[in-house]
Image (tube, rainbow, N blue to C red):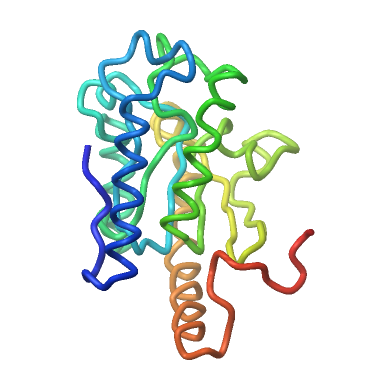
Length: 223
């Protein structure tokens, strides 16, 4: 389990790094739902404290459960390779899941399990403060895209308020199982560099005082 790493050690970043580490410790000891009974490790998440992009998957698999890190198995390798082809380093993004412990036999998380971890994900988003949230798979997609199925909604980009967008994508494991979904996954992922460039410009404008930063209410946000 690795804490998020900031670009620098300024006072604000130090405070946020301490906050994410405290949250990691809390998740590691969590007993909110029955998934804690069968786990080897909880898997809080890892990545860059100042990431523009947060990937949100469904839940840890067997490899992740053993190592305590997200997306380290075959689907994680595929995700890393896809990002690398686009010039995006895994160390530049933040990766987590909607549930932090492995469901038995990799089944879908149950509603009470999702509810138990809901606050953890919300706090990760608050601390990392990404401009872009990429959902990997139908379970995480439902948090921001509750209507329709992933075969219809993959590639969809939605303004979710506070200067952020969400983008729905297939889970890398699903992409590896189905050539058609793999093609869709790679095409959707290819749109990410342009979204990152736009997000970086937004952050630069916010730093100059010319725009609002992420994480605060923006004009047009729902009440």
